[in-house]
Amino acid sequence: MATRQRESSIISCCSTSSCDADDEGVRGTCEDASLCKRFAVSIGYWHDPYIEHFVRLSKERKAPEINRGYFARVHGVSQLIKAFLRKTECHCQIVNLGAGMDTTFWRLKDEDLLPSKYFEVDFPMIVTRKLHSIKLPTLLIAECVLVYMTPEQSANLLKWAANSFERAMFINYEQVNMGDRFGQIMIENLRRRQCDLAGVETCKSLESQKERLLSNGWETASAVDMMELYNRLPRAEVSRIESLEFLDEMELLEQLMRHYCLCWATKGGNELGLKEITY
Image (cartoon, rainbow, N blue to C red):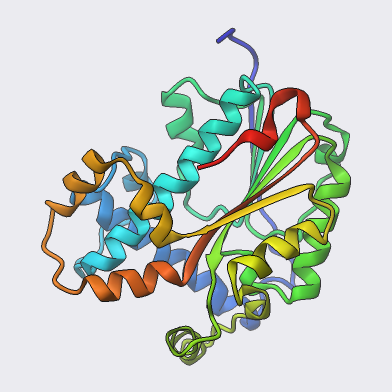
């Protein structure tokens, strides 16, 4: 790929209203996710030489089903990001919403897959004038972000994104199938930590996830639960990670995976083949 100028921006959004006690539980999930990723990397689930510079290694060993879940999450999101970058030949921008301690920027740089612009924001309500003026194909990423917003707020964000960018893709990773008993237990556990899933209503099914995207301006929408995605992973990679540690409760892994999903939507970009992107 031709060498060109690339730009990275990290936008902090910590107003009085967004940094009060009501957000503490949500911000705590960033620490939890970062520690889980750091531990999984430390025992060989995937290679990330940068996370150690941002996240301490927890003394607490994480359960195998948690490690495999994060492996599937990182692998799935990464594959879609790379597919978008290759379709656009990196002439694009990435907006990573609720990025936390994510190290995607540096890992893409190592693979010579940096987009023209890469933005990270702490909270999705931040809107920058810079983004409005850019006409590049745009990839927006939200991992466990929309579920902490009310359905109205997430709909407004999705609508804003669809209206703001002519050629775009949106990747969303979050809960699904939350209406059953296992989903209710997940909700109750988070509430005990003062963390309410304000947008859980839209996490009823894969169909409700796709419908939210389509009804807010996106032209195509796809969704798979993480168990389906896990079963599509390269068998050699699955065999490798499953040999790292013993898991005797495959049913628990499947329950967890069936309650998370990866969704993606596109708008425009027909000449780039964005509608063809799949996992």
